[in-house]
Length: 128
Image (cartoon, rainbow, N blue to C red):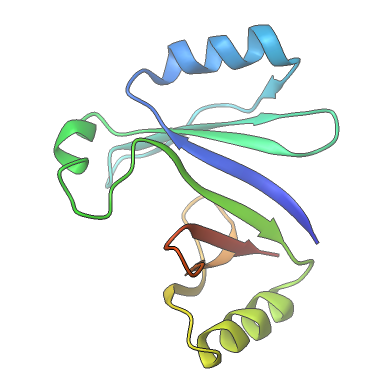
């Protein structure tokens, strides 16, 4: 297993992208945009393959009023190698009394993932 990416909510997507690219020798993908959710993001990749996801919504201040919203670090993702392992690990975690807040699914940007919380409520995406 390995950490696949960390995700950061940001008020200024382009400024944050420029910062990380300038100082950390990262490469960026093309901007992803979901028109239904008005969500945009970049994945910034290290040479090692680990990535940072920068995320933005134009109504982020309204979004931040939600009780579970967090500005800054939103979650981190652990790649387990296959859809079957995502399914099995998510089930095992739920059966052990931990919260599964997102059942396994394919996201709009093509990831197969689930979302669970650790004992202190930190969100972890389990990806293939």
